[in-house]
Length: 68
Image (cartoon, rainbow, N blue to C red; front, top):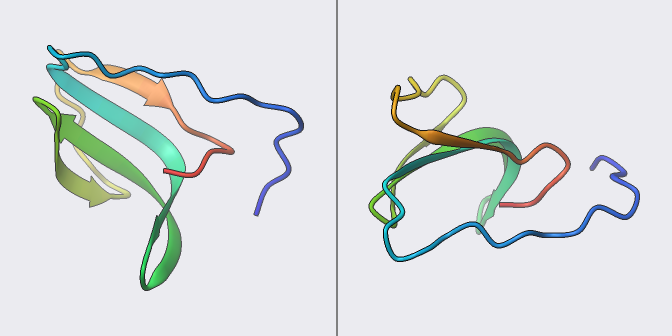
């Protein structure tokens, strides 16, 4: 884990989410944790990985030092 020293969470989803890439966060599930990007389309996770092609219209959120 990385010490991020006092970083606070900021809400970023609204009803009309469009396309969002949450980039470089620590993704946690029942198998463990991994550094990855998360592609969210219209409020639903559509892809998780470290080599996601970022759509031109996407809002990119830097999730470094954050748990996703």
